[in-house]
Amino acid sequence: MNRPLGITVNRHISDLQRLHPKATGALSSVLNELIVSAKTISAEANMAGLADILGMSGKTNIQGEKVQKLDEYANNSIKRRMARCGHLCVMASEEEEGIIPVKPGYEGSYTLAFDPVDGSSNIDVNVSIGTIFSVHSRLSPDGEPGTEKDLLQPGNRQVAAGYIVYGASTMLVFTTGEGVHGFTLDPSVGEFYLSHPDIKIPEKCKYFSVNEGYTNYWDDRMRRFVKYLKEVDSEQGRLPYSSRYIGSLVADFHRNLISGGIFLYPSDKKDPDKPTGKLRLLYEAAPLAYLVEQAGGRAITDDGREIQDIEPESLHQRVPLIIGSRKEVDMAEKFLSGKG
Image (cartoon, rainbow, N blue to C red):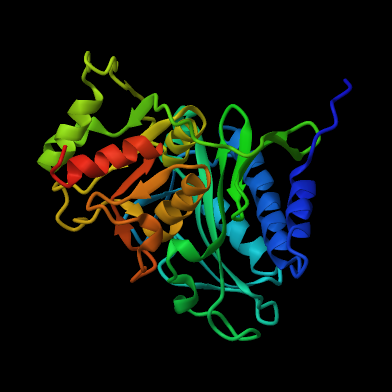
């Protein structure tokens, strides 16, 4: 079958590099190595039922959560490939307690923080899952092993961030500060092609995504905001927003990015050990905040802090997250400040 010629992700990355005459190509190489890892994980995810990687591995991660077999496979795949790419100084994974050093002699100028498989508990029921990544320039001197300090940088210093969603098709979405672009994997040739250039999150929001099973644990202000989203406003001619919650952050975020929506994971009172929220700043909140801001949206905590401005204090710091279409995030901020 003849296929139309399209722009590959490698070509797109090369074109972006040409916009910066002083670029060394190191960041481009980091992205290209991540793309190879994504293809490997995609192949395994698609064969999960046959490859004996469904279900639990019998291990527990630093978060106290059961590690899925695919989590372990994806984590090891990314670590092995990126440790020798020659452009990273240190890595961190949501699945591991401390920093992950690169191979001695391969130290480079960037850091990598990643969630190898977001939403992996859903793979047993064939729901979309994904990989999230964040790249910063190192702070420590070049040529030396990277440190934890290199990783503990706010989101507003990211040089690249993105995710790969493994669903009906495998799609890569990323930014290097030049807008947000999406690429869909053609499995017949093993190549990502540009399918969603210059993504802008719609101003008109269609959906809200939140686990309403935790309603009784929320602050009253959050309950009022969600109630507002579900109400009809006859004076403004506003119908209720549609509720869409998958329980896989990448999948929920991706739908809202393309179709317009707001995702909410506020603080709750159900677990006194997690008073600041569930989602991880370095591996989930900050990279998605970079993406949504590049697409015209916004990301804040439930006390109004901009996610991108938060100075990380630890590798596994958790934060509440409100992210999506700007108008709705602004409205959430109004309610949470007591003005709604």
